[in-house]
Each structure stands twice: as structure tokens, then as C-alpha cells.
Amino acid sequence: MTKRERVLASVRRQPLDAIPWQFDLTTAIGQKLCAHYGTDDLLTATGDHLVWAGFREPAGFVAENPGEGLYRSEFGSVWARAPRDLSVGDWGELVSYPLREPSLQGYTFPDGAAAGRASGIPAVRQQYPDHLLVVGGAGLFEPAWALCGFENYLGYVMSDPGFVAELTERLADFSCALTEQLAGMGVDGIRFGDDWGFQDRLMVRPEVWRRLFKEQYRRTFGTARRLGLVVMIHSCGNITDILPDLIEVGVDVVHPLQPEAMDVPFCHREYGRDLSFWGGLGSQSTIPLGTVEDVRREVQQRLALFWNGGYILAPAGAVPTDAPVGNVVAIVDEAFGQLA
Image (tube, rainbow, N blue to C red; front, side):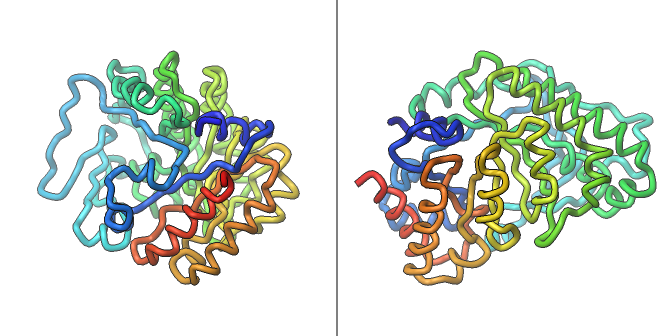
């Protein structure tokens, strides 16, 4: 089987020769693995089954330079990415946002249908015909708090739900228009990213999530499904309470299955008939803190649990920069070992 065929078979619970696997790597750990394997081609070295492509700003867009080390997004949010970020990961910091009050008056949304956004995707498909091609989709929660400021936005969820509903609808309009550009591009899946979870629960009560966000997710995921895409959602933390809702609104794959936050056997038992899970290896625990033997044991446990598919073996989030290289190599060896 090709890597693409293997992932699709697992997600569809069809016969397959091995469970597919994938790696998210911070820049620093990626560099260490390149040194270990003596190559810059980590897709081949690790056997990663997925390849990524992204949307671009539309043709003619010129990002305003807000200062050294800063980047202003199309939505007007300003992000900083200092060298210190690479010591812990690849995540920047929100330093400025355009909506200083809970109002859209005077604010102009970017046009998700603007030409040129998907122009780089066909070349990725051509270069990697045998990998599962996944594009990152536009979420509804993270773009919202980036427009308002994180603490402000959570306050609006409770104090001004009308504004939040309006903002969510407009972000869903953008997301749907963006996704429509993938028609005919040869893309296999789209992963929408919205981190909804603390380690032990949702950031908002499940009933609030359902009231304010569920139907707009149904709309955005429905657009992807009409294009024949595998619908994936990324949310760190414990989102167990809304897994039935995600099934209802059309999600195929949940990422990451995070063992520090979610009960892996429970999720498999209760929801594995309707959802595929992606992750399962402890990025906060086993991979950075365990021994090689611990890592091998965890991989073997996951493969045994998901032996009949509905799974993509992977770290539950980007492998942290302080993880021993030998632990990551152990995952690779165990994954390849299925094909021996």
C-alpha cells in the first residue's frame, strides 16, 4: 500500500497492512533528527505518511511590517516570534489585536474567496503523489481570540454572546470560502485547528460550546465534506465532552488523542466506531521523560488497541525540543517494524 492508501484505509476502517504514522516536530527537534539520520529528508527517514500544504495570502497582498520580529496577519493581529520561542517550540506570541471592543463596526474581514490562496497546493500534490495531502483549514475559536485578545474574548463568550455569535458566523463565512478553493486540487484531508481544551476539561462549558459554535462548525465541516475531504479537527486538551457533537457535525478524525488529558481506551471504546483518532503518544510524558523502553511499550500498546484501524499513530502534539532523540527514533523503529 502507498502511504496515502494506508491512511485512507485506516480512517475508513478498511483492510490495511499496518497502522499509518505521522510526526509533528518542533524546529529544534527536527534539526536533531536530521543530524541523527544524516539527511534533511525527514519524511523519508521517519516514514511519515502525511504531507502538508497551506493557504497563502491572496494575490497582491502585501503584509504591513509592524516592526522587527513582528508579523501582522491578514486579519490585523500582530504576532511576535522571538529566538527564545525556538527553545520551547515554534509558537509565537500575540502582541496586538484589532478589535478593542466587542463590536465589528468599522472592521473589514479578509475575503476567503480571493484568488491565489490555494496556488501553491498543486505543486505539493505533484511532488508527493503517494502521501496523504492535508491542508490546514481556518478555525473559529483561535482566529476569534486573536482578533480580540484571549482573555477579552473569553469574557465576551459569557458577557456578550451576541457579539461572539456574529463574529463566529463571519469567521465561518471566511473558512467556507477558503475551503471551497480546494476543489479539484487533489487534496485528501483538511485539518481545522482550534485548541478548546484545558488538561481536564473544555475552556467553556459544553452547553455554551454547543449554543455558540456547534452549528457554525457543522457548516464549515459540511463544506469540506461536500468536496470529498477527510475532515480533521485539532484541539489540544480534554475535549471528551464534545466528541459526540463532533461526530454529529461531520468530523472524521480527532487530533491529538492526548494521553495526559484523555482516557485513550475509553475514547476508543466509546467513540472509535465513528471517529478515527490521531496521536496517542505522550508528548508531555513518555516521549520527553520516559526511557526508550517506555516509548516502545507505549507504541506497542497503541498499535494493539487500534489493530483494526481508525487510527494514525503519532505524538500527541509536536515532539518537544528537549525530548531525547533516541525516544523519537524508537517510535520510528516500532512503526516501521509493522511492515517487517
